[in-house]
Image (cartoon, rainbow, N blue to C red; front, top):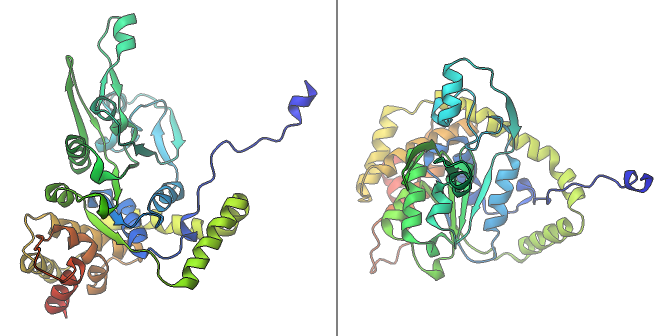
Length: 353
């Protein structure tokens, strides 16, 4: 048996490329960070060329986040304090002042494959329990696992439309309602919805695009020196992940602390009335349908101010986020040559400057 004890314990988790080591793609990184600070912004849609590090960045942001306190053994990652993020059982236990065992878990990062079925996403009847115990029980799906975490859909423009509808409904309301086979259950599903896709493979329907809070566009880096840097960074990581991780550990920790501080600060950030009027003026001028654009821009600007350790939103904060918040909400005009992002900028300059 002595042979067995000599083996060095190996890390079982796959090393993940560090977020702070990602070069460029600032718009995508900022959109992800703001959504982590305030999940109510409503997720990010990342559209860009293939091979630009979309999936790498999204996995890296989940790895970066601090651990969360959850009720031990709870299928919904229930929060011990916030009723909005609790499953029924946990809520009853808290209201009855029972002793609740807690555990720290990594922020869940759930991948939704294109072939997923509705049952698997929403949850369904637990067949095993039904057959063995003869009771109706609920088997939680991916939306339950993603509560308080990140739900990532790669190639979201190829996903079935009704599945995208379900995802966006839960992401917007923070709850998932299941009505099937005699089961009626409602459970918390507050997650950051991140979709990525390649515009060459087809567009998303406008009403689905509108449900994503922010929209980041990614272009391939054209500067040869930057490209070499990216390639070197990747090959260094592939050769020796541990060295690359320890090299970036300090910056990762600093960013993690910043995000945690911003999460606590964001609720006390103030946005002046005159600025709110101007934001809505921009939305009106751009002929944005509905009021989601106004709401998301307000939230994102507050999150950006909190990220920069301020409690007052400035015009610069709004400028940093407004393009990502509104670009995908404009009506497509086939005859217009101007890019929708530039159009938002132009109207912003006219109204704010």
